[in-house]
Image 1 (cartoon, rainbow, N blue to C red):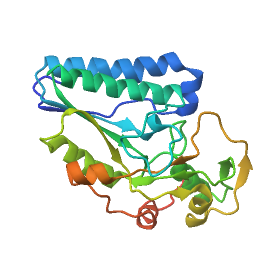
Image 2: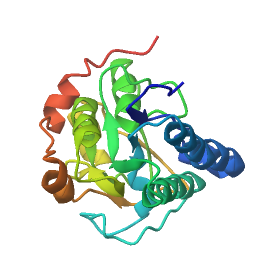
Image 3: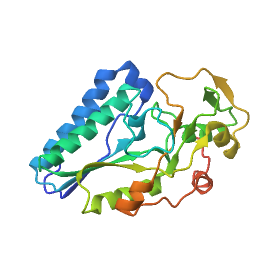
Image 4: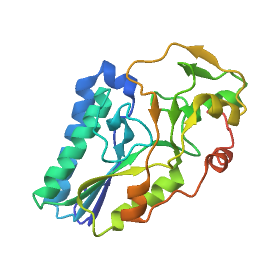
Length: 240
């Protein structure tokens, strides 16, 4: 599948924290071993560079804003598998087999993101419920913060990561805005109505907000779409 490719974008993954708790072996196999297999295929085919879609989940509950120098503290099998996938990228790069870079995505959202799957982000779920006249459900007190980054910004960042010539040793780099929004603020911004509160879920971090400074310094990447504009791009269409 990668024969003749100069660059590989490895975006495939399972991404549900809750599912990973129930099926940790599956997540290790798909996320960690799958990345190692992709690296082996890409390197053997002569590709020069691989960009791995990493995750902010590797930080756990680190104090925000979170820089790449923060000690990883994965709090779920999903996060552990993502961190191991990064380790494989560094190993292949250090062995001189293929250059790699690992953007760590914070909370990605955008148009056409599905709200009816176990992988859905909170924005897609809240927007769909608002469009259907349903009450949003918040797990916990709603004061947990997330760094929401629009998919168009992520794509721009990935292109910069793909073309960067001075990073390739498996470097991790945050893809986030540096701005935190709590879930109560999000529900209000989406005109979603008064939330219903349920018990907090296991393995979910309290605060997750990026320090985007390294991405700006080494890739020239800064986000352009603020949350208000990003939410407006959704259209609040119900899922079908």
